[in-house]
Amino acid sequence: MSTPSRTDAGTNATSAPDRGHDHGENEGHGEGHGHVEVDGVELSAELVEGPSVASHDVAEYALWLGDDSLVLAQQLGWWISRAPELEEDIALGNIALDLIGHARSLLHYSGAESNRTEDDLAYWRTEPSWRSAHLFEQPNGDFAHTIARQFIAANYLFELYSRLAGSADATLAAIAAKAVKEVDYHRDHAAQWVLRLALGTEESRARMITGLSDLWPFLDELFVDEPLIDRLEGVAVRPSTLRGPVEDAMAPVLREAELDEPRGFISSGGGRRGDHSENLGPLLAEMQVLARAHPGASW
Image 1 (tube, rainbow, N blue to C red):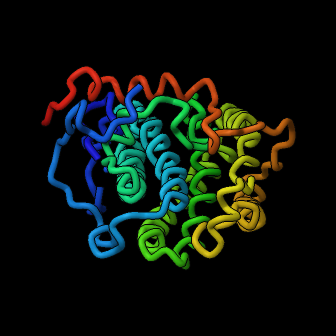
Image 2: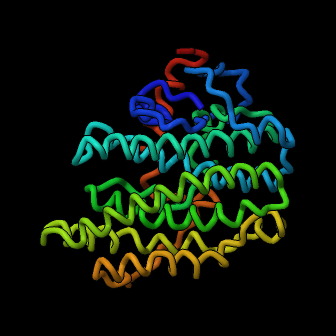
Image 3: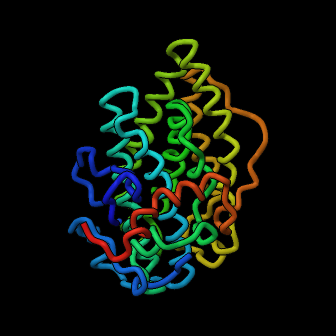
């Protein structure tokens, strides 16, 4: 996927050191706006060796997962040059690069079904066509908010990809098997920061508690079984089966941090059906502006 600047899908993630990972209203197929390309990075081998075209339902499922990763990568890229430590500039940039790699693979696989490239899906879809869950769309807020979002997201993605690696769809299984190794680092990084902030100063603890309280309502949507899942038995991971493992994975960290599991309202969600929070539109406008302003350009 092209990441030419701060305003594109990687939000300047390419400026952070790469740890060696593979890194991808117009619903057209590329003919009207050209192709935006910045580098020659090859997609992962699983997409070269696996089936070239997914079924319609599998393509929709891959779109769900790819959109989650791309939106989260866009959010994290904002922290480059703004993180509280230089090391965190690098760490968050590398996590964003990992997520872009996952998004590239998933959107490439999804788009083949409708003859669209990963860049078509990233830069030329309008808000109702996106399938990201509301959690990933929530704004960065302060650093503690970002860590709270990352803590929930990374634990969810780890459990998801751990199970998706056994999918009957060989391409999804291969993508997940690669992604889970990277997401394992993401969740460890988030857990260390939850502990550091919660057990630090009064100010950092208060911010961590607020961050978790603000983000926790968006956890429930991740476990909703949409009708698509019923048509993908053996291929997709049933979201409702992830609730227990995800909550069990987060609980020891919360206990060590002396934090209670937040209680309160539950977000209605709807991202899988194209009903999004008010945050997605501005995020897409920033991410897509360069590609739309200079259709057909290359870097």
